[in-house]
Length: 141
Image (cartoon, rainbow, N blue to C red; front, side, top):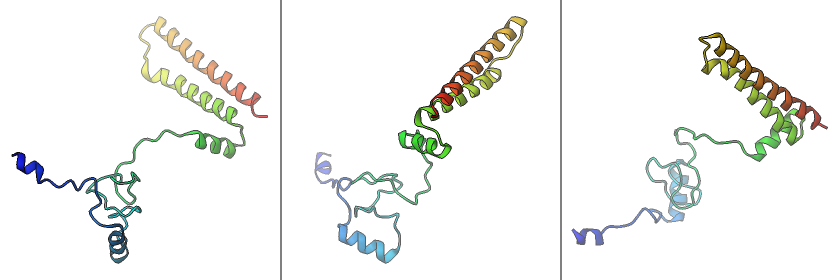
């Protein structure tokens, strides 16, 4: 068994084709999803290149959840005509409104005391939304 391990070829870390051959095969076949722009071939059903790590284009794989970053927040503010702090407070206000709606979805009132508690939670969420919107109006410039 030890002899079999010594004879194993480790092709995973090396590109199966030379870069010039991969570019020539890509041009000849017209299949851009088989090779990476760096010249190495993609491993079967892989989402990323094993050499450079770029994402494979044209693969019908499920998209992963990507959290928006700072640039998306800046572009949202520019689209709405808001500054970045005003856009942040707008998003906070909208999330508080969603929280006020979610209270009624997750909690049901079975007694009068439960109903009062749910109404208080809803009022607190709505007050937080109003406060966030007021801060956004003050930071709008």
